[in-house]
Length: 180
Image (cartoon, rainbow, N blue to C red; front, top):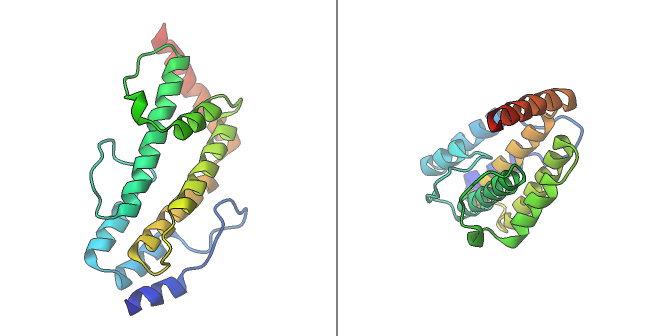
């Protein structure tokens, strides 16, 4: 347990949406964790992703499972809303998708700019991470929370309006080409 206190004391606070550089890298954070956490926890930490596996399977952490369940539901809702806009079939049990997540997907899909939609989705993701945040700041789940928050912050910092619009247009043109 004392190694977790040591680890927590070394972790700098940061804001996901801050314009400044992040005070820690993912590699450095992972390195710290490998020195302070047990092997099973490090394995879970190294496998963490902002993109959950398509098939739900237990990770060994209730926190990570809850995050993956929420993110998976959001992604299915986004696909469902986008498919409906394109008049394409997408089969997902709509009853299993929570109404609040479907509303988030509808709001994001209705935004004029893909960048604006991604910023909105990232704000929602950050809010969910905060609601799932473990109360015990020294628990293993609190380090998983920190890792996901760091991954989300790194992702947000990679956004580039011009490059994003070019990629969006290319994907959209490809989709329209397949639809005809």
